[in-house]
Each structure stands twice: as structure tokens, then as C-alpha cells.
Image (cartoon, rainbow, N blue to C red; front, side, top):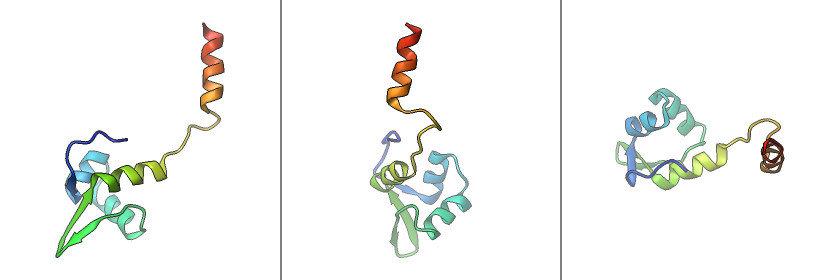
Length: 77
């Protein structure tokens, strides 16, 4: 989970927090990959929206799972 600093973020704040440009964030919104709230003309994102996006898009490293990693680390000891 991304560190919680506040409840809601503007488009610019969230883009900066995620390390992406606002155009990329707008693309994620258009494709329905990240949820948002629209209040009149203002777009805001909740911390829950961000957490859900991160969980849905999280990828495991290729060929690495927790069991394999633990076996490897145990061999080193």
C-alpha cells in the first residue's frame, strides 16, 4: 500500500505521488483502470481509489514467489 498522507488527491497531486504525468493518469481514468470522483468540474481521487488501483495492478516478479525466495535465502544461511 502507498503511504497514506491525506484522504483525497487532485489529479496533479496523485500524478506526482505516483511518479507519472497527468496525461498518463488521464489515460488510466479514461480506460477505467483507476476510480475517481467528479465534483462539478473538479476530479478527485480517494486514498481507497489509489490503494485499490495498486492492488489490482500489482505484478509479481517473473519466476519469483515467496516460497522460492525463502528457499533461496535459506540456502545462503
